[in-house]
Image (cartoon, rainbow, N blue to C red; front, side, top):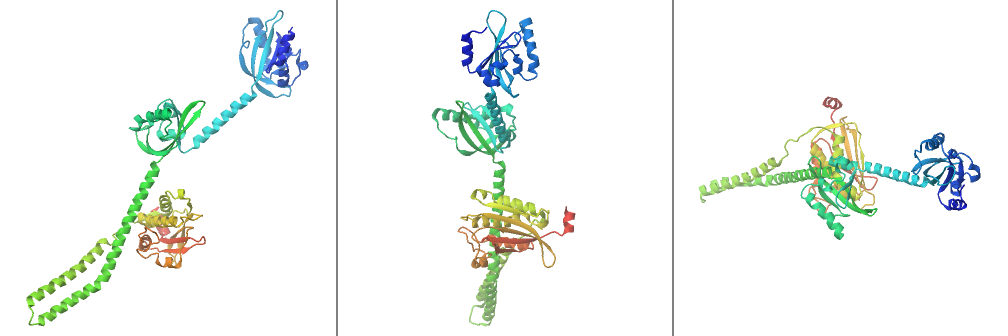
Length: 504
C-alpha cells in the first residue's frame, strides 16, 4: 500500500510515474501520466499496464514479469531505455522508461518513471535533416571545402576536395592540412595558425588569395583560397574554400597567345599597308627621276665644254641609286606580303563558342550578359581558324568596350546560313551590342587604317578584320540595331554539302 507522503510526491513530479504489482496491474497513475497517455487514473487503476504499450510490446510484457519472478533476471529493472508508449487516442510516442523495484513489505511492486522524449526526438531528427541538407549542399558545391581545427588537423573534407586533391576523406581526417601544400608553404603553415591564435593577426583570414596546392600524385596546381574562422561549441575552427585555377589560367594563357598573335598580324598588316602605300606613291617620282637623269645624260653627251667622263659617271651613279631605292621598296613589299595560310575545314559552331569564351574572360564581372544563338548543324568552312578567331575576338572586345557605362549590357552572337544571289552557301555571323551605336561619320571611317574611336586604339583592328574576311571570300559590314547599339556582320563561304559529307 502506497503511503500518503509517496502519493503526494508522485503528484508533483513532472515525469510520469506508474506503480504496478507483480502481475502488471496498475496500482498508481500520477497526473503527469494522465496528461501523457490521455487516461485518468480511475480509468486505468486495476488494469494491466500493457494497455499503455503498442504491439508487439503489449504481447511480450507479461513474459518479462514472469521471467523476473521465476529467475530474478533483471532485463529491465534498474535500466533506463527508450521505448514506445500508446496513448488513449491510439497514437504512439517515444519515451524514456526507467523501472525500479519498490522496497515494501508484502507482494512485490514496480515503479516506472516515464519521460516523454518526443521533443528531443524531433530535435534530433531536425538536426539530422539539417546535417543531411548541409551534406547535400556541400556535395553539390563545385569548389572544395576543408575544415581544420586550431592545430591544423583536418576535420572535414568535402567531395569536391576529394576530387581535387585525389584523397578520400578517411585518408586525410586527423592529419595536418599542410599535407596538401607544396614546400615552402607546408613548413610555414602551422606558424600562421599559431600567430593568429596568439595575436589575432589576420594575415589570411577573410582574404582571398592565389596559392598553390599539392595533389596526391605530387603535382602542384594554382588555386584561389578563401579562409574563414568560426567558433563552434567553444572551439575555434577554420574553413577553407578552394577554387581550382588550372583551367582559368590555361584560358588566360590561350587568350594572351591569341592577343599576341592578333597584335603580330596587326603590325605585319600595318607594315604591309605602309610598304604598299610607299611603293605606290614613290613609284612615279622615282620613275621620273630615272627618266630625267637619263635625259640629262643624253644632253651632257652633246656638250663639248663639260668633263664628259666625270659627268657621265655621276649621272650613272644617280640613276643606279634611284633604281636601287625602287628595288628596296619593292623588296620590302614582297617581304611583308602575306604568305600561304593554314586553311582547313573547321566546324563554325565550335570555333564561335571557343572565341566567345576567350573574348568574354572577365566580361561577366563587368555585368555583360551574353546571348549565343547557333544553328547546331555542324556547318563547316575552309578557313584559317586562328585568323577567323582573331576577327571574332576583335569584334567581341569592341562590343564589350562599346557598352561601358551602359545600363543594359547584352552581347548577342548569332550564326545562320544564308545564300548568295548565285546560290553559293554562306554562314553569316553577327556580333551585336547595346552600346552607344555608330553615327554616319563613324560608319564612313570605320575601316580606315589608323583611325580609331578608342583612346589607346591603333585603328587597324577592323581594317585587318575586313582584310581577313575578304581573303576568305566573305565580306564584313556594320549596321545600327534596334537596341541603339551596333551590329557587325561577316560572311564565310560554306563547304558544299557533298564535300561536307565526304569530309565527315
